[in-house]
Image 1 (cartoon, rainbow, N blue to C red):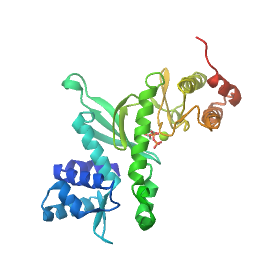
Image 2 (cartoon, rainbow, N blue to C red; image 1 turned 120 degrees about the vertical axis):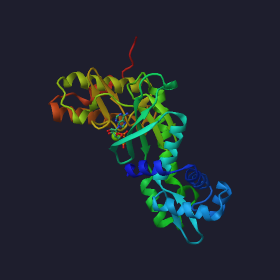
Image 3 (spheres, rainbow, N blue to C red; image 1 turned 180 degrees about the horizontal axis):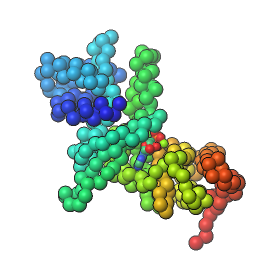
Image 4 (cartoon, protein in one colour; image 1 turned 135 degrees about the vertical axis):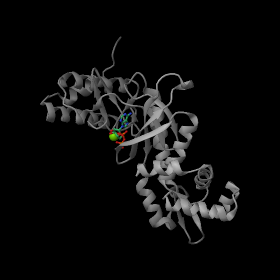
Length: 298
Ligand SMILES: Nc1ncnc2c1ncn2[C@@H]1O[C@H](COP(=O)(O)OP(=O)(O)O)[C@@H](O)[C@H]1O
Ligand SMILES: [Mg+2]
C-alpha cells in the first residue's frame, strides 16, 4: 500500500536509496542482482550492506533468492520511493498526501509542489505510479527459471514504458485537448495538475446534453490531432462547471492504427451508453462517429 511507501520513504536515508538504485540499475543485466555488484556500486562495507538489505527486505522494498546464488530484486514500493526521491530533488513534489485512486494499472496519490523560488502558494498536484506488468512480476517470481532476458524485467519496463507514453501524449495534447497539465515524469511515475471538478460517474449533471456535447467535442479535437484515447468511460472523464477534462492516456492509439475505427467506436459507445442509461439521452453512434471524423473547414 502507498501509505506504507510514504512511511517507509520518510525512513529511508541516502545509503538505502543508493542500495535501491544499485539494484535497479543492475537489474538491467541480472535477473537477480548479486551481492558483489552491490558492494561495487554502493562502496559500503559488506557487513553494513548486508544489514541494510535485510532491513529493506523487512520493509518489503527488496526481495531475495538464495538459489542458485544470493541475489536481489526491488519491489514496486522501492521503485515508487526512487521516483519520489527524484521528484523531491527536482522540486516538483515537496510533500505527499493521501491515496486517491487505485486502478487496475495505477496507484494515484495527492501531493504538494512548492512554488518556484518560494513565491506564491504551494500547489496541489497528482502523482500517478504506473503498475502495468504487475502480474508478470508475480509470474517472474513463480516461473523465473523459464524466462528469457527481456521477460525478467518486464514489470519495470512495462510500467516505465506506460508512464513515458502517457507523459508524452499529455504533453502533445495539452492545451488543445483538455487534459491535466504535465509537471514531471520519472521512471514509472508522472506528476500532473489536479483535474477540476469530479469524475463523471460520481456526478449528477443538471445539463447532461451540454456535457455530452463537450465530451464529444474533446474526442473530436483529439481525433484531429491524430489520436484516439481508447479507454474512454465515465471513470476517465472529469466534469466541472463549464467544462470537461480527460485523464488516463497510456493506451491511446494513432488514428492510422489498423483498429482505429473500432477503438473510436467503442469510446463513443461507452459515452453514449452511459448518457442513455443515466440521463435517457439517445444519440446515434454512427452520427457521432461521423461528426468526430468530419474534417472541419475553418
Ligand atoms: N489529474 C488527476 N486529478 C484528479 N484525480 C486523478 C487525476 N489522475 C488520476 N486521478 C484519480 O486516480 C484514478 C486512477 O487514475 P487513472 O489515470 O484513471 O488510472 P487507471 O489506469 O488506474 O484507471 C482516477 O479514476 C481518478 O480518481
Ligand atoms: Mg482510469
